[in-house]
Length: 136
Image (cartoon, rainbow, N blue to C red; front, side, top):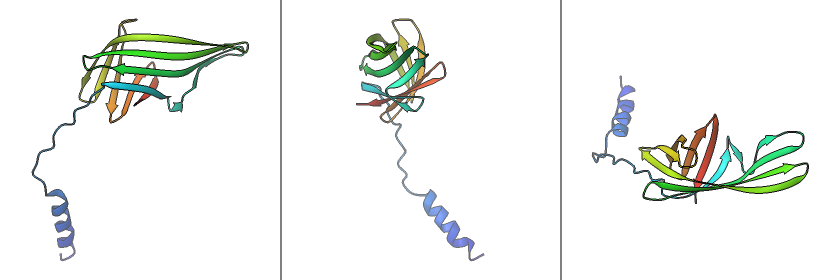
């Protein structure tokens, strides 16, 4: 029985302590986010490839404002028979944050994408593909 007392005392000390309630952490998407990786692969990432054509994601930057809107600018490179062309795509829309959950609504195509935010990492998933953004 003497052996259990020090263990019980350690457990009591570890569980006791500060009576101050924990405040909820406020999560914000406001700021500029840069796409870091797609499914764990760091940019640039090959999106599609055939014998003669390859499409790569070069960059994607999302700027979220305090009024719940965002602007996204992405660049992709398409190479056909050795000839490369870089193209830009712009999207705008709105977003909502509830806890750590984020829902992004595109004005361009009306789609909604779910995501999460944790610290300086914002992740969205669409069609089985995970996009991880990092706060600048």
